[in-house]
Length: 428
Image (cartoon, rainbow, N blue to C red; front, side):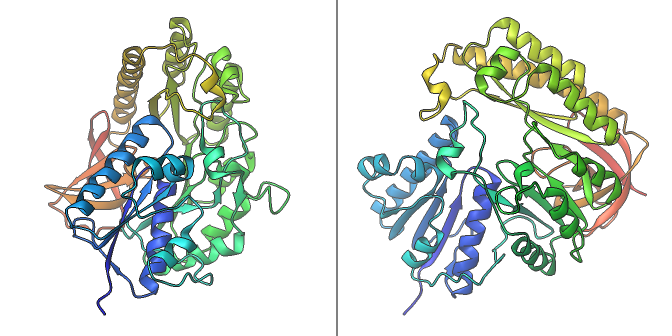
């Protein structure tokens, strides 16, 4: 009997993507047929995001697209999983009855069985990579112990739960054998790694062990909470050449009243001290951060403080989000009193400021040499990244195809010109 062709559609963050890759790895080992992104399929699994309003709308729209495909006979079965279905399972059942089965964020074994395969517990680290083969997102823990007022994640993903270090080493070894050279460490909060199973924070120990895996050349950290950051990780950046001098640490705001209402555990003074401390310990550190504008009670004065903070600190990378008023969060009890138009205007203003800062920082790189990894070939350029750039969210380095390069390999380049978010370079 011909096996059905299964398509996995992964929405939302890189943590969701890892879940999708684990699911696909289980199916592949069972001999199931996976459909490519643009192929027709018999069964579709949508791994949804339910974090903020825009993500929820994208998830709903995607589900509705496939319900229409099912009605027209293009697919036979529709399965929904992930954050949206964890958060709104009953509503989805009632409002979109065309969905055949609905699962949450921790139901991969049940989904594998639903799709006609056997879940194999022994397949530690087995994944079907959907990223370019030379790097992988590497999830070291699940859930979050923080209680930020705007965030629904703890209610969806639960409390912080670290993965065993030995399991992570096995996963890294398997990825390296398949050609992965860069691990992008992800979690709701990297800094809490190990505290639940070892009784202390063990992020530095984990990174050191991962760097010993043959074939791994870069380890990059995403999503580190600001308070009680393990300083030994910063010292490790200076000692271990495989640990990228890069940190993604969301500060969210700079007005003390807003930060207090956000339940962040840090204030404006600590913001400045933290960034200055990071830069003093690791002088070449690339700091990426994110901010939320339009949070309830954000006055013009509060926004000005945030704007001036960005100007003062001259971050290397900045992301800005407009506040999303989410039920089942502490902030939902507050009045969402900043009009959407003002939220968007403030976000655009901050990004214009950051664009100029980025341009000036990039211009300072002209004439300097950097090690880059090549991600892809696009038109007349090979596209790469420096140690200070993460995939999709940061700057890219454009190198002329006059020199033939290998995707996934490292090269030394000299920067010849710069734009706000791109660097032009030549091979040394």
